[in-house]
View (cartoon, rainbow, N blue to C red):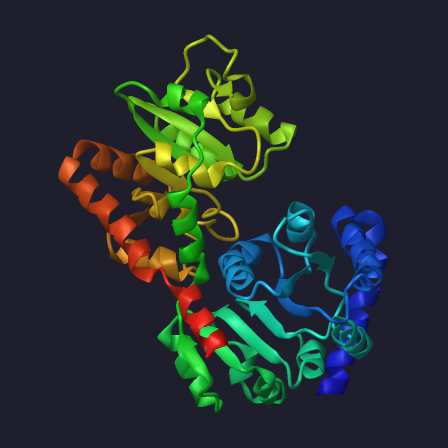
Length: 403
């Protein structure tokens, strides 16, 4: 099966090269992978390396609090940060706490062997769900960890045809998993080196909330008696539903879309004709109850200003980050595609979040929360408590590393 896996990897690489002339993202990724080994030559062979691998930006945010704790508790280690996706690398290629930042080359035996020989890492952390067969093989004998791992029983490790790969997991020193289900599944295939540490994202969002930045222009926009609805990481499908749902509601709306390209900002402005842009807010004197955030990088701090958060993506492949809103103690709404996210399921069970299928349901939820003070306060409290009770994953991991 390993032979077939390696054939598949080479076929996959071939397809990427065929597509790359027509796909900017893939072209960028392949170029970055090609440059990787030249960048690794800058590593001093006398340095101790702590290597963090994150597939993309989401996994980076998940691994970031642990990276920062490792930097604090192991100050003599240099940090190597690797990404597979351009969405992670291009956003964080200048991240100050990492000493080396690279694209991870594809999982061939040659690439894996060369990468590990050059880096010679002392500590290795794969974030959430990163299983690269040849890299895992090359890291045999190293201190290799899975962090914030979450598994489901339909994944190939637990099938007859995945047993060959499951045996490779013996190279991990320890699995830090999110929940009991993942621990039970690993137990079934023979692994006991497990700690249910929870999700490091809770540590991350709590840090954001405790160090939230202020935005005076947005604070001025929010002044007054009107309640604030914030649509975070919204897509056009979300925005169309929101536009219809808030028609008769006496509120202010902040839209921080997932895509901030001008073409999408134009679409939002066509939906909300009386809106103003954040980039023009300081100089714009016209009155408006709708603000469009046409920049990136500030959304996680903006939830402090709203009364209710709407999280986008639920009418597409899946919702975006709900924890950034929950940590500020906000009731949350989102579309129907949320079932892959345990925190969304938990928040719904706690009446801290509400899934909606159309504009009528969204309007009903907003009206209910805004019109019933007791219900609103219970929902907000449940949201905040949920995050506070789950903080601490990084502490458990650091304790294991030190012991």
